[in-house]
Image 1 (tube, rainbow, N blue to C red):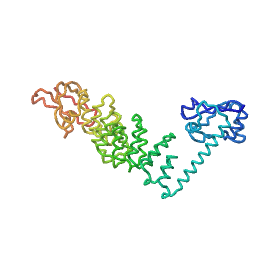
Image 2 (tube, helix red, strand yellow; image 1 turned 90 degrees about the vertical axis):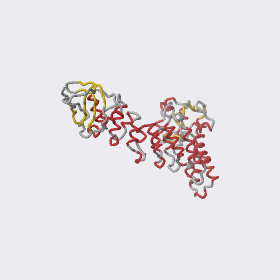
Image 3 (cartoon, rainbow, N blue to C red; image 1 turned 90 degrees about the horizontal axis):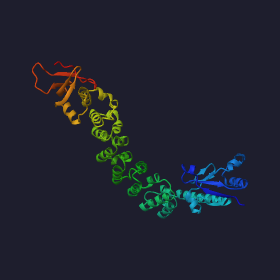
Image 4 (cartoon, rainbow, N blue to C red; image 1 turned 180 degrees about the vertical axis):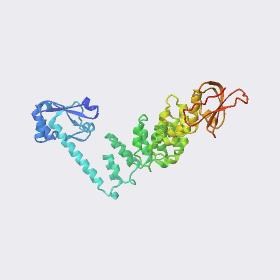
Length: 403
């Protein structure tokens, strides 16, 4: 009885290699040993003989996967099997499988010779007709074709050829000098996979990328697309749109330095608490820290504020002082700006060391860096307003007031 093999999918192996198949040897182990040696699927010599024990021969042997040489095994992908009308679960003689491997080796060698021949041609010998046939055979030949010979149709043909063999298109897109073809490929990708879109867009040549591609990446994908957009196409409107979508994550790298203004970082800080955490400390102004402290009260961590802001006399430290004095953080950014610029603020109560004062008017003396407090009612000359301590630290409390 002629020894047969069975091609079937392996569940465990398929978790990592979904296009693979398993080769199972059925009967006649001695004959299978000779065939495996002849096919080059096991090491030759003493090492191979020691490996081919009865226990090992009963194990499934992975021999078909993605056109690579794996432990001296010629591995075929599922498209090549389909070409030979082979499917998982089909029985065929092991000798016939050996013939198929030889046939495959001949085809690979012939393709390599053709590809080598085309690569050895001079530029003036690579006529449009030869280039067209080269791309039809292998889409990767597009890299060997001069740009002045390429056409949008030829580039689309190369993409179709590579997609037919399920090869990656990310590296091929860098050989395409036409923006409309690159944009077509980006639009074919699902929007729920933005990282893959950006990975492919990163291979587009800077001189090929245009306004249409950039606007699509910024508006439809994610704000982090600034990382793959050439600097000469980064406008103020596009950067602001990216910040609106992704916050400061879109400003991590490859962004025009002249566009990184305090106003832009303030807009990024309004996106989320995590966005504020990724702003460089040197760009965290008191206004930004105040905005985050008021907008994200539950998630705010004072330790995230740079020491220069915490220890200085500024609008943020004024907010922390007022918060400590009134035991309340229910203030708006506009109120704090007005108070910092000298406009009075009415509060319900002010806590001193020994007493709580109700219905007070708070003012800030920017010149002397003092927070002043007085009751709302009219006072006599003896009841003169007493200043609080100077703003030296953020955890500042008002001085005791005499009544």
